[in-house]
Amino acid sequence: MSRPFQSKNKDLVNLEVVTADKVWEKDKKGKPKLKKDLGIFGRIDKGTSSFITSTNLTGGNHKFVEDTSNLSTKTKNEVVKLLKTEGKRVVYLVRKKAHFKQVGIKKNGGIPET
Image (cartoon, rainbow, N blue to C red; front, side, top):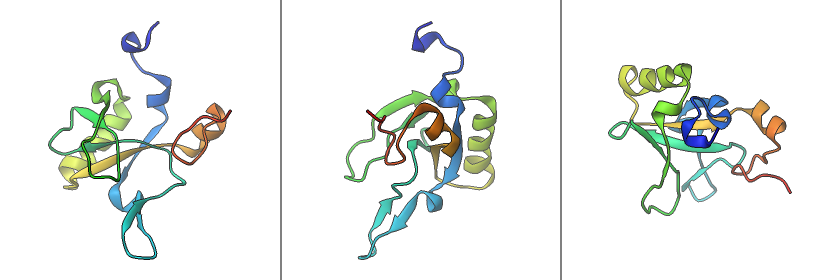
């Protein structure tokens, strides 16, 4: 089957939901930057919770990555819990560490090994 018609995509099943404090760190000058050891898939904002956008450092527009309806039920429930119950504004979807070894993805941004 082609990607749009699959009920659950393999790359969307192995995601975990984390808050911003686990994704961002401060460098020597005190500026926030993304942790390089995480495979960040995307982010979900509270106002636009129906789709996943990319995470960028330049301050430009975020790009569409995926629709949240394709996520697993467990992941959707975790997103709702963090956004609505705990009052977070942004949550990040991160690939699980076991998924790196299985697919052959480097930890530095999800670029496949060649």
